[in-house]
Amino acid sequence: MKLWNTRKGLFLTVEQKVYPVPETGLDALLRMDDLHGYMDQIVGQGSVAEQLSPEDLLAPIQSQEVWAAGVTYYRSRDARMEESRDAGGGSFYDRVYSAERPELFFKATASRVSGPGQPVRIRRDAHWSVPEPEWTLLVNPRGQIVGCTIGNDMSSRDIEGENPLYLPQAKVYQGSCALGPFILLATKPLPPTTGIALAVERAGAVAFSGSTTLAELKRDPAQLVEYLFRDNCFPSGVFLMTGTGIVPDDDFTLAEGDIVRIRIDGLGELTNPVVRA
Image 1 (tube, helix red, strand yellow):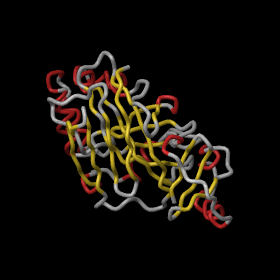
Image 2: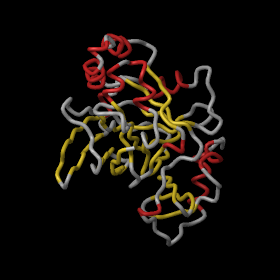
Image 3: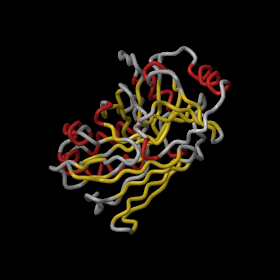
Image 4: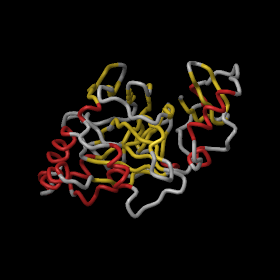
């Protein structure tokens, strides 16, 4: 089942059939004791003829916070160590990669999140900016993973590399996050063979491309959620980005006008143009 947030409301699609969701928003859905059972009831009521238009799609979020996990892939560990080596922070990333406790950080409020086709931003005071394609979990208020989507964790690598304490400025700003195009409602995680691909288009050509699989994800998703919910609560649920295994080369930086395309098997493609804040 795929849950879509649109300008006309929420819709569910199953095998190319479209079902309107009468609830007022994602907040109410996530508070339900049996979300998937409720969706089965909607399917039983019959579909509608209306088709979803790409122009109507919004980010699949209402009031949820977005959090992120860092250094969950070996490639991310290497990149973070390299970018912060001059600042003396390289060893921190090596240690957190091997530690029991994961790195978790706040990423965005709903107002900072871009949806499909909406622009993501690079900071005006950054000189080295990259997209980070991430399998993103949707977790209900009880800490149960109920679905997933595609996330783009935009990052200013030069700001974080200057000093690891600048991480919030490198990660949290208007347009620094994108989610979509839909939420896959599922009780089981995606298989390790799931492919993740990133392509950045510039002036009609591919400026960067890379791929990985979920098999390279070091952390157990359930463990990440458990740590996130320690001494914390999310009354309307929360999105949790699980880290990136695709990091562009050090000589690559995003530019205004680029198009970022992130594809994850089973989750479709999230496409966003790039603007400078």
